[in-house]
Length: 111
Image (cartoon, rainbow, N blue to C red; front, top):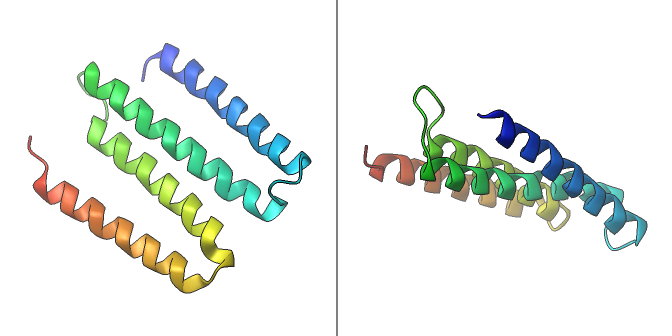
């Protein structure tokens, strides 16, 4: 990853952190939902990075598909932790659904 994207990711992470802290301070979410929110929002950012990487791929770097899969996993993990309060079965179903979708996408991916 280029230095520019690394610096951009650090800046986005701090903005996500500030937004999550402000949501806790405003009592819109509690501290139990803080980490799932961070994971979910940063997962969305990594998926956006994958879209940028697909536009200008570089040799010997991770593929855009692998970056998007990692972002999707973070997003699903955050969502699963967030809905864990509704019941652990919903979280398990969401994680299994995500694993199935990633497996299908990997199988259908063209090189």
